[in-house]
Image 1 (spheres, one colour):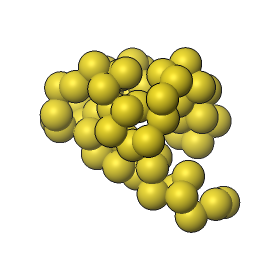
Image 2 (cartoon, rainbow, N blue to C red):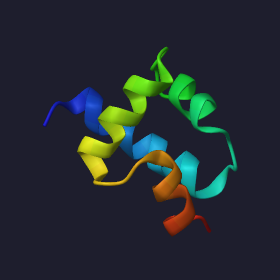
Image 3 (cartoon, rainbow, N blue to C red):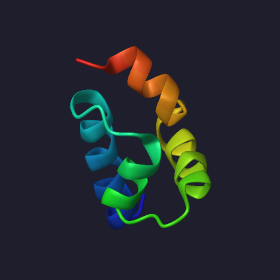
Image 4 (cartoon, rainbow, N blue to C red):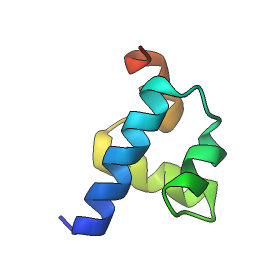
Length: 59
């Protein structure tokens, strides 16, 4: 797994769990200008869409 992808996804997971940011805001915060592409990458990495992840793991 590529290091940059891993770092971006770990940060995205952290933001989705605690901050209450919108998915496009998380995408921008971790370096994706296209929220749809971020969602595809996030799903491949975690097995969840950002919305599913937020629902399941929100603190």
